[in-house]
Image (cartoon, rainbow, N blue to C red):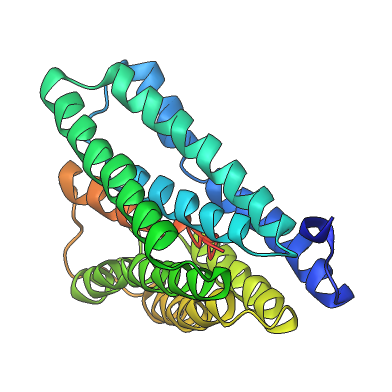
Length: 254
């Protein structure tokens, strides 16, 4: 089957490594949900990043299914869809009525409504499979670049507070490594829609690590103990996870 035919051995190699690293990135929020389960409460966390990560994985899955030689894209984004669905299910189970209603609205509008609209428009307007793949691919690029750019607010926060507590180095490192793997995969597969957003992901990941290196031993200007800011910081990093994928992530968002 063409679906399982990857012409370039290096594309297969980088795709396998991309899958492994992206799985680790997708599992990064696991301690948060273990804590939610233990506390029997969502503790003010927001469901939006996980809904965005699920949307991104579903969109990349659609692109991969339209394409050929895309089994490695399908595998990582299938995993992303499953793990993000589990995260969202746990959130909905323990969320307050207000938070659950809000999350349901977001899921309905974005993960059902918007995704269905993209599917219907691209399927019925663009009858040429080549054009349809290109259109969906560039939609994926826009979504992935937006997701990759999300941690910029955390970089600003680190510079402002001179504290790296909101930007864990291992996550930044693995996100950067994931971007390298998926860029190389896209390059050898000659798929610009996969390669391009991971260029952005690489430079933003390097920026995060550079800022971390500058401020890791600097005395914080003002340590922030406000729980809400901590939660916002963690959540923005989680958005990136939801890549190439594939969120990259992704990307992890591949």
